[in-house]
Length: 308
Image 1 (spheres, rainbow, N blue to C red):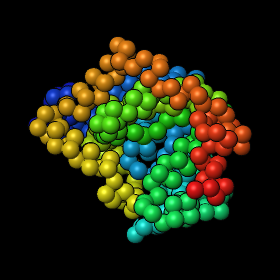
Image 2: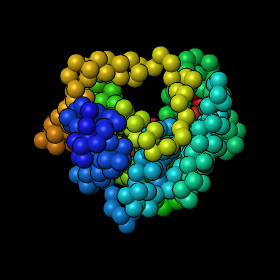
Image 3: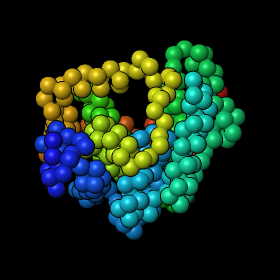
């Protein structure tokens, strides 16, 4: 297979775009695709201060690398969750994030959940849910709260995450199966800071396949953690990804078409503003200031206060 750009030996085939690319042109093509997504969805400008949430994985570190290469002002944020697992998961993820920052002369903010709040995510989950099930909901709630808090408190214009197309398609599939109107109305490349205490959020990799980002990280020589979170085994999102991978195998480009068609339908008026009534009922949490629909404290503050 030859490179579509130069005729040299291709190292990867981008099936959904009918491209074969050599290493040099692939490492140019990926940032170009991300830059087009940033521009198309008006995610942020070169003058904005950007905070990238990094986990030590391929997607978030590659996103940080790409934005840096594109000339954006971007710092990193790593949240230590206190998850062990076979490779001491959190420690290794933090090491790789710090290593990447040091290699590229970038700033990395670190929030240590056990140090700040006195408990790891598994410990909080055990206390809150009395040991029932994996701590995924606790983890998601804590990460969203801390990412938003740091972006807001440190004065960043936008928080970016490394969610790729496979992630977005799986979430879209899940929400469509349940016809979760509120979640569908909010899903997209950009989530505006339209409520008190919320930071603007963007997903520059939303049109990039996971396979593409794996290849980018390997070709760029980015060292990342290969292991999944030890609590991810059996997650519904992984099952949905497997189903969508089967569809993609039979019909290359299916995931991209699914997601882009959804965004086009939204832009065409698929969801009216009243589709998410809870959004209009949000108010600042009296403790942390972040928006919540709950009466009194938000879910995170209630969780950290010991309420179940």
